[in-house]
Length: 184
Image (tube, rainbow, N blue to C red):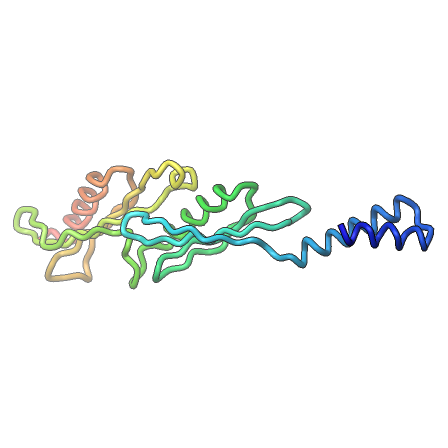
């Protein structure tokens, strides 16, 4: 309001036209928006065993109010998203992008382990992890599984299978892949 009153008084003294006044106000308000910075909020969610922080910001980009952000666990930070028209769209894509990076050597919060599982004479460790196949799957909480099967006495050899929406299919196919690589 103070800026508006000052602008009108300034323009009257300078005998500016209404168009020039409008452009001046537009520039002043535009600078105010740019200088105010983006608004950011954090949300914390447990996704599987992953304590997930979802950091979403909003600001004016290409003359539109848009949202962007990233998701992280205690060990892994996902990439920053593109700009979205909604905060939920940015959040879903941030979570999707984070889980595409998991698991890592230090972050297996999205995995379950079955140690010393016996199939016939073979003792193996099975690692089964989940992620999301798309941002839409994040929204509907539809998990996509991948698995590794390793002999207990030889972790250098592994069977691997990716990906299926069924945990059972994923684990069974990882065991089959291991049997082909290591028939002993």
